[in-house]
Length: 256
Figure 1 (cartoon, helix red, strand yellow):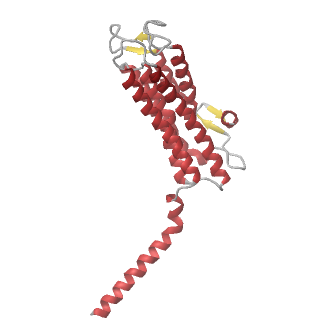
Figure 2: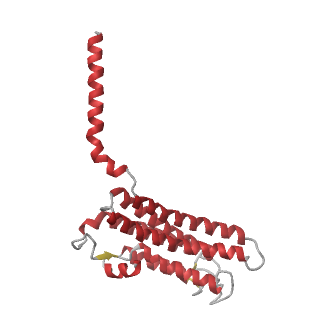
Figure 3: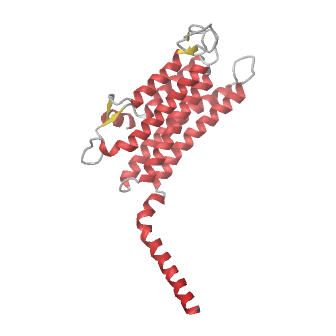
C-alpha cells in the first residue's frame, strides 16, 4: 500500500513540475515588469499627485473671505504642471520600450490606465476645483472621463487593425488621443494666472470664463451650466469619434 501511495505522490510532483515549466515561457512576459513599465507608472503617479494637489488646494482655500494664499496658488499651479510631466513620461516609455526591443501586453494596459488618470481624471478634477461644480458641469466632466475611457479601450482593441508602417507605427489615430486634454489643462492654468477661478462676476457673472447658461428653470437652479464645461463634453465626443482621424505626424511633432 505504501508503495502505491509513494507512486502517486511522485507522479503528482512530476505533473506539477511539468505544468509549472510548461506555462512559464508563456506566462512570464505578461507578469514581468520592464524599465518602460516603471516609467509608465511614473505617468500614473503624476496624475494621482495632481488629483491630490487639487484636493489640497481646496482644503487650503475653503471658507476664506478673500483671495487664496500664495501657498495655495502654488499648490494649484503644481496640480496643473503634473499632467504635463506625466506626458513626458508617457512619451518616454514608448521610446524606451522600442529601444529595449518592443513593448508588452502588460505595458500596453498599464499605459492606458496611467493615461486615464493623468489626462482624464486629473483634468476633470482640476476643472471641478476651479469652479465647474454645478450638476450639469459635473455631468459634462463625467462624460469627458467616460469618453477618455472609451477612447483608450477602443484603441487597445483595434490597434492591430489600424494601418501602420514597416516599423509598426500607426499612420493615424481614430479620434483625438486622450493626451490632447493637455490643451484643456493649459487653458485652465491660464485661468489661474488671470484669476478667473476666484473672481466672481467676471465674464457674464461666472467665476470661470465664458459665463453660465440657464438651459431650463430659473437662474441659479439645476438647469445652469458653465459654457466651459460644455468644452469638456465636446472634447469627449471628439475623442470617441470614428470619423475624425488625427495624423501620427501631428502626434510625433508634439512629443518631440
